[in-house]
Amino acid sequence: MTVADEVYPDQSPDIADNLHDASLKEICLFLSEYSAWLLGSGATSIRLERNVRRMAKSLDCEAEMTILPRHIHMTVCSTDRSESYTYIIATHPMPISFDINTRLSRLSWKMADEGLGFSEVRAQFKEIIKTPPANKYLVLFLASCANAAFCRLFTGDWAAVGVVFMSTLAGFYLKQVLSEKKIDVRLIFIICAFVSSVLGSTASLFSFGHTPDIAVGTSVLYLVPGIPFLNSFSDMLDGHYICAFGRFVHAVVLTCCLSLGLCAGMMMMNLSMF
Image (cartoon, rainbow, N blue to C red):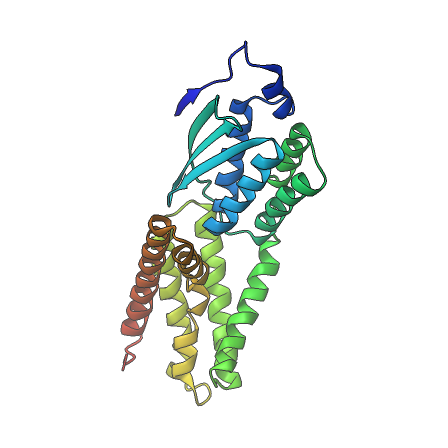
């Protein structure tokens, strides 16, 4: 969906030179796609805004955008504001990726500091978005170790640590499988929290160790949506209130789904919640 004042054939040579042989339409479409990937990979609104303006300045044009929870409204205009192009794009749905996030941000600095041309930047962008995800089995193992470490941090004994490691291993693997099948993320959180809490309850059921309650409580910590909460707080501080509210509500909904699965698992195992 576009609303455009495109670059006309009789456009002055100065403007064409300033755009480095790229029309405002091409620049706007590229910056829109760049923004959709950057926001989808877990970037904050302030990072997105600064990166896009940095790249637009390198192309001798100006960019203004409205960042919404699921859409970006991008407008690019020439420096004298005689020509402009506007495009609305949906954010790219993808798992949070710090790798893609960092590489896209680095690309904006390369454009500003090294003077990369538009065609070269676009080629590098296409390579970045093809970045394969991290090895899922390595991520599975490290996430299980991290959650087990949380159990130990909250004074859980080694028996509880072992139970949390196994419950996280099972729950996180189930999360990966369900995500690959494109199941709704809210349902995924409920199911995984339920499975992990049931497995975490085995410490109490079979009297493993002396801290079975900590094993149950920390078995679902890997599902806590920390990045959406942090990003919503960052957006609020920067004045992006609509995006901040949308991200906060999304994080709260996921937290409620996590709690629902945890409570269902504890009820099934006949464990007291208080």
